[in-house]
Length: 334
Image 1 (cartoon, rainbow, N blue to C red):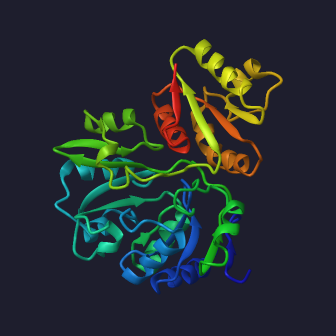
Image 2: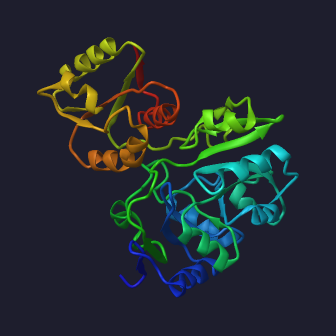
Image 3: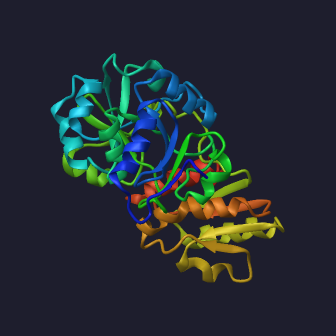
């Protein structure tokens, strides 16, 4: 396609400039970040941001975060930034970390769903930062998926949904992390994690001390995300034997089922339909492939997908958050 750029083996500055000009003009571009693919445009152009909402079929009550190229750009978008908020940005920028700050009037209301705050993130993907620098504007860039569907980490999964509705597509291969960023807002001097992501609670505690999980304060906390177009159920608990027993019990009652498990537990499901997400001793690797694995699974004709849960600590908290959303909180704790 003419509106396609492959940067898997690098890119020229004139290529980045071409895409940056499209973004500055309010065109809609799909591009890779280090987390998932984004669908982005000029974050200060109200009409352009509206197009992103419409293409994604995104609820206008669900704010969009802005990608920036550094703290100086953040200061153009946000006000009353506290020393702790600066410290968090200095520690976790660039990377999979989004912070919610009080916004300035320059940020269009459509970006923030008319709220007085805006989420900002600096990607560690150099191409993204070049786009922002060359376009001289923040990029409104939610994940490149139809709202309510799985996030995309591989461009092959994106073409079918968006090739006819966006102005340009940049192919950077697979994303580095695969899990979306951690979203934090400082409330009364304490970082509140509104969405767990690749940056863990333990990492933030080392910088800020006390940290609170507070998904209820997220503007999109009541929206349905990530759900597969299949019946799903999550089984979890501290007693491994009971978890395995319950999964096998559920499987035996549904003839066309598949189990989503881990390398160490495949031996418990011999003779059954089962896929592994990898070793639960390497959650980083699982986070990199979880969405692509589930995307391929969704295309298969199973009536029920049974997820085995993880221990909820460290990155396991983030993965369990995604599992619960995928299963629409249809879960059994044993």
